[in-house]
Image 1: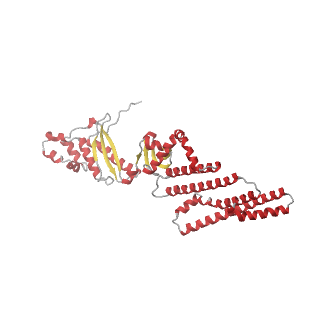
Image 2: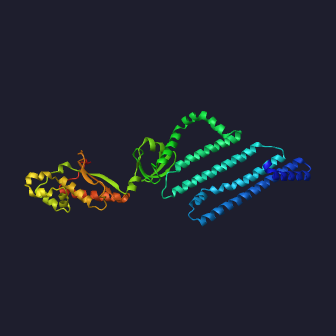
Image 3: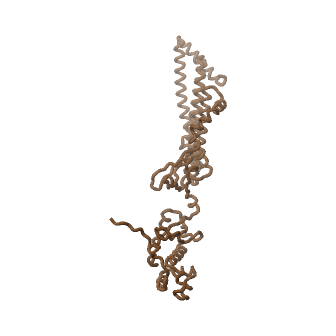
Length: 411
């Protein structure tokens, strides 16, 4: 009580005065306790409101003077400044109640423990609000990073430490002694919470390696997931699919068990690949005759395409039946398609570009277009891809080629 000697002196004087006024000692004690409680409540409410007013108005003043101080706004939004205002009323109540119990010679040690527990809880709430402010700022940052998992890990550590400290206060033991005692139960704890611990480790790995970030476009065929990462926690990743549904994928499965395709790097590169095939009916493929070749040359771009493969001059000067077999109608279409892509402004010319034949299949001869667009926007990309194949499908009959279609039974 040495720290509260002036307050204790005033409490003693006040209790002695009440004892003189009231003839009954019991009545004096009751009036003394009720009056002290009433004063403590009134002063506590007043100090709380005053402290809150000072903190909030001071914060608003700083925000106005420094408009770029987003951290203060984030802390205010997450109610960080609400909790410090409780400490002064808590201190007033503790000092007065300690003095009251000393005057009445009625020590209640558990009351001091309650004060300590409340102080620890307030500190935990302040730290939790500060961490939530960090997540809040990160979400609104242009370079958002998946820190939610790391923040949750820190919060778990804070909760664990706070729980140990609270138990230590209640049982009057050192927190280090309690932690040492938990070592014996660690094996059982790890066995029970194996999946949760594994998910925590996977979440930390996800945060450090930046495998997936909020806003990334990811695909997980196993879970039929294809969409944008909406939120990342220590235990799961929330993905908003393009059909506007929401999928929850366990972090452990995302990192360890399954492979995830992240399209972020494609978007950063600024080009998106087209690999799509056009099925040609094998029965329509034939060698070119001079008449066919002359007809094909009237199609805009065919002559330029044939010059690129250095066969047009050879065909024009050598006897018709000797070397015309070097040219087929599907070969001319392939050369034309390559020429068409090389002159299409939406196609990246500095990246791989080819029109190739894949292995023959029961569904015809696959003629594959392999190139990159100069945009990653999905709508624009799909439009470019559709334009290319609309053109090739419409042009195929001009080369005496038929697009393969499966026979469909009637009725």
